[in-house]
Amino acid sequence: MQSFDVVIVGAGAAGLFCAGVAGQRGLKVLLLDHSEKVAEKIRISGGGRANFTNRDIDVRQPHKHFVGENPNFCRSALSRYTPADFIALVQKHGIPFHEKHKGQLFCNRSAGDLIDMLLAECAAGGVTRWQPCGVKALRATGDGGYELDTDRGQVQARKVVIATGGLSIPAIGATDFGFRVAKQFGLRTVEPRPGLVPLTFDGAGWAPYAGLAGLALPVLIETGDKKNRTVFAEDLLFTHRGLSGPAVLQISSYWKPGSPIRINLAPEVDLPAALADAKQRSRKLLVNELAQWVPSRLAEAWVAQDKEWQRPVAECSDKALARLAERLARWELVPTGTEGYKKAEVTLGGVDTRDLSQQTMESKQPGLYFIGEVVDVTGWLGGYNFQWAWASAQACAIAL
Ligand code: FDA
Image (cartoon, rainbow, N blue to C red; front, side, top):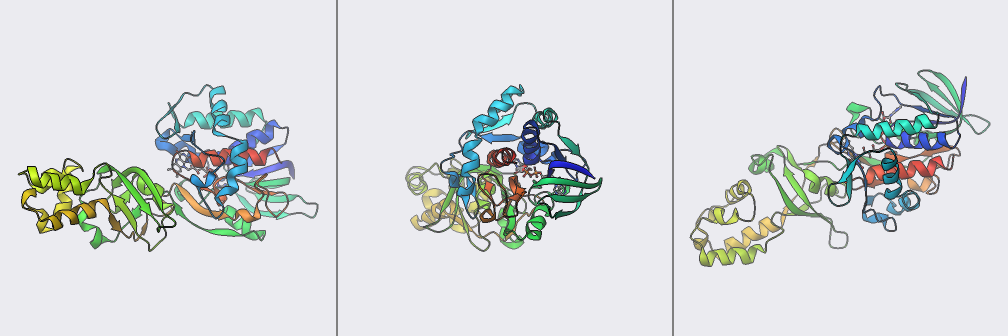
């Protein structure tokens, strides 16, 4: 039986990074993954250019950008391995990158550069990588170590790191392995659900908007009540089945099934004032006035909903205009669901942080660690999830 200091299951963002650091510390590391291709999720991330970190992470207040039962759990790891640390590594490897907006950093060429960098770091640490190689069973041995039954035979290790990610995009290898291992060792888990995911609406209720598919516009979007309100200023995208775009992906991580979302479709104008002014001076149809402030396709779909809006603005009653302003600035709707794991960028929930050390990512089962997305820490869209993968992997690797 082959023996290692540490076996890392899952060669995605967190697993690759952890393996490189641990190997370079002199540990004998086996990294294994059941997928044939390495780090497919990195390859497809950020539209193929990997939004690999975010300069704006506030490590003192991680709850601003991270969701989970205890969003402050990630503070220790994020403050010890910062975006600047990862940027320095990317620069050391000569990878060209740029900032898009809101602190988001992307590779100039492709996400493949990042994967090559992580593989080079593993090679520098003498990491053994078996891929494809699944794990059939994992058990603790009497001496405090572990044995794994893998597709390439049995292996022994002092320590095991689970880096198998969440449930999003099963087509490229996502499984519930990490959740099953947690349960096997009596660790708590937080019920998983899709995050950063498009929202869907029922067929008949959505019919008036289905024709808007493909339309994008900047909005303010919010969910929650007065005490617990979350708001994003981002772009919204209409789809055939519902709503997507950064605004909706962000709010989806906070949305509770059965509750409404509210959207201001014209956040840059004071609509009641603008419409009152138009009524005084314009002879145009209301729809044409509206088209100054929102895309004309949206203006047309909107006025089609009410006969009183289908006239020259000068002939519209004050009440009708007020109703229009209210509906555009506070469009309230209740999603029926989400597009699910096949479209979700991340998985909310995961291994309960109450059963993990925030310093080392070791679980209450000694010698068993969890890093990356399998943990109940989920970041906003914009490079936050990769930064959590790097930071949790580093915290673990230096403690192994
Ligand atoms: P990750 O999913 O990367 O890796 C898990 C690995 O475990 C996989 O290689 C899988 O094959 C393997 N595995 C699973 N089950 C196994 C088993 N039973 N046995 C062996 N191996 C197993 N984030 C961000 O910050 N910026 C971005 O631009 C994007 N963009 C983006 C786009 C899309 C389309 C998606 C789906 C996701 C993103 N993300 C993102 C999120 C980001 O990709 C994600 O949070 C990280 O990849 C998580 O890293 P992990 O290493 O934890 O899991």
